[in-house]
Length: 432
Image 1: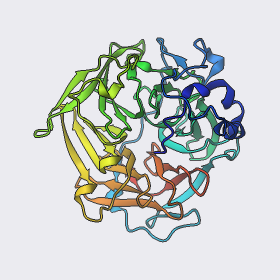
Image 2: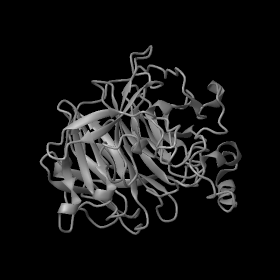
Image 3: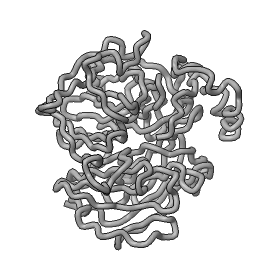
């Protein structure tokens, strides 16, 4: 990911958001930029009492309960990813695909989304999809941009037609990846030294809320265990940690209340892979010791990136070590699913954002590398799913399937000079 971590978050909130990209460009040449540190409050300048009319404006903490939604059951699927054939030549969009698959551009940074008046954000990063009441879906996408950050959303109807676009979070910065929740919210992570996690409503109807109880550090991504209601978090530092958040209780809808709980850090036995979870003394980093340094016996992970829960296993990537990890919750043990450094001419490098199919295929997006999304099958075999050509200075971000499993969304963060968000349609899955 791009490293803007030294930009002071206190310069953001009100002054720059309203001025758009032009205001941001002017801000970057200001002598104030870069001469501060990360100690300013991540919510400086943001209103503490934002109401419903302030949708998308983060507010601090509080017992915010997002609405319970009456959604149709998602279809049962069977994966066909193991059957994907070799990639062909690049199409008109610069995307190499296997036979039977097609790609289209659904949004470009700095341009209004087709049929709407919403300008798509720069540097699109982590994303996820959400089933909607009408059988359609929403794709949310972070902006890993300093000062203006936030999250945008694309709404599709049941036929796959793009019908709306809007913002669901503003006045944050360097929103990298995140995670979806079983109660249909999006957790967006700030990748700065004093970064927080923001809980967002993909429908854009409820104001976003800061969740400082999830820790103050250089957040990358979050995954929710729907059986035990624990949250697992990665940290994008060369000596970052693997965290677990245990909420204190449940809200009125029967889901975890993220306003309070215990943040823990993993200590891994190097021989057995057994994980011991140790509480952090200062998860808000109010003292002089960064969160990751507070428990010296905890285990360092080199550049934590994407994370995803699937059937009792939490998968996550560490780009610095080119590894995909698998943490088995029931046994509290961790193992290496893929180790690119142990392979001559590895087929997958720059491991970053990831998602997992219905049937356990781990799809990993490359930051650099060959600009691919590569699937690690349950068998251990690797299959390229797509490749972008001609954009070698970019990275692939935000992979997520629609509810039917036949559409895959992702972005090229810097694209051909501007971010590009794509949709690939084809036989990734079929009804079970």
